[in-house]
Length: 151
Image 1: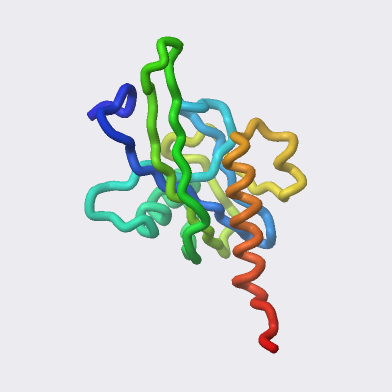
Image 2 (image 1 turned 30 degrees about the vertical axis):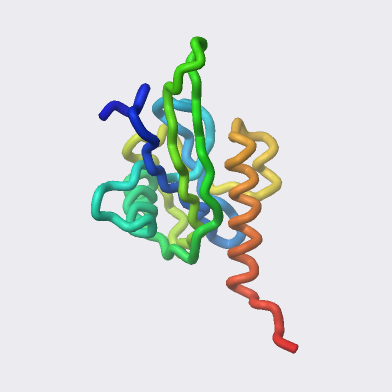
């Protein structure tokens, strides 16, 4: 089935990959949102878990291995054409992950990759939902690395 004008949504997996508080982003090389910065990720394959898909997609797009820590959120990305028909529909499962490596290299369908601080996000062409997911993922990562003291 074609991703353009699909009969059903495609499951996509994105990863908020953190290293030292910086987030890994990929500049999209293909539609939708070609040229925009986004989380590394892509379509889940049959027989692959969400976490396996995240690891594979990050490796393909950036060359980095990651450790997935959990699910951040699930969102829908629906794009309509001028006639109102659904051109693209992705159900996106976003995970939070960490990587010890920082030598990311653009591969697969990424036009570029880079590490960014949360302060850098305002200067990037970024979907508002992506920024929300990054901030939520960073918050989760911070809590997981430094759990609150028990009383």
